[in-house]
Amino acid sequence: MLSRFDEWVLKKVHDAAGNPPLRLALANGPEVRPQGRALGSIVFQDRWVVARLVVDPDIGFGEAYAENKLRVEGDLVAILTAADKSILERGKRNWFPSPADLWLRLTQQNTRRGSRHNIHRHYDIGNDFYKLWLDEQLVYTCAYFPSPESGLEEAQLAKMDHVCRKVRLQPGERVVEAGCGWGALALHMARYYGVKVKAFNISREQIAYARWRAAKEGLDDRVEFIQDDYRNISGGFDVFMSVGMLEHVGKSHYSAFGKTIQRAIGDRGRGLLHFIGRNQPRPLNAWIRKRIFPGGYTPSLREVIQILESPNFSVLDVENLRMHYAHTLEHWLERFENSVDEVRARFDERFVRMWRLYLAGSAAAFRAGSMQLFQVVFAGSKCAALPWTRAYLYEPQVEEDQSSMPAFG
Image (cartoon, rainbow, N blue to C red; front, side, top):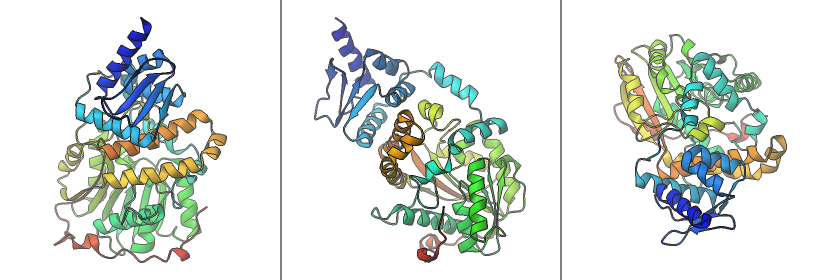
């Protein structure tokens, strides 16, 4: 009797996921197979794990994987991509927000105090951890691959040049960067484009590293790294840059973000927003918000355009680099797996499984199309630097003798 009930529940889970080409099974129990060939299998430890998925699919799956209560047989990225595609094709989920999801929305607000706590939980877990699997300059945003065969280091340099060309940086200009990570882009802009940069970030570990790099490379007279909230940025800049930071602002603070941009560059400046987005508004996966990115929200393009409407900014260019981010994440995942023993020694097996699922699941989301990577270029109504054509985007990249670039510790 229980076996029939278990099979019925597995079938319900499979149907709810859009009948992906995957085999679902209980360990030493019943299974559900797709109509065609199975791409792989998900094997649950017991019926209570399956029950958690029924009650709260996002958190239930993430927690079960992290706790090693479900086993994925086959290529993890391919299996998660297939599941994502099936869910997208099925349409809107029937599940209502769970109590856990509602609790996360309440407790992870991106107020000034909340933002510090949220950022600390993700970015201040140790620079040495990120050095294991990011590129040499610790660029933790989507790369731009000149070709699919390009390496990660080359692609991250290409991305930095790509965004610099998009805003047409000129020597002597003043640039403000909101959310500067470990400082790679700010230093790149100063070194190769001759601009002066003020870069804001509330992660103490990232700011400390960025300041160390600036001093080591003799750029601390051109780049100032400021440990402060973006809401405290004041005026006097030609260009506003935000690469991979908008996801941490939170929908309820978009008005403040728009006012910050307006205060920074007025009606004569220009800017760029590079961010993970969606085709339609919806919350970020609850498990990712619980375990990886507290307070995260990935907006639709329409939501971001609305940020720029009130300050009367003109949108000049929109590009979607979705497949570039999928490829970036695959590079990160490969490097992570190559360093997994060291990660496990620093943390534990549960941490390893959490981050493996986060990286693989994110790659799958971009592959399937449930996540997008947008770059939006905008300018004030009196901006004099408007381009006549888009040819400037494809001018030769900055020639960089990488053999003479400083080493990063």
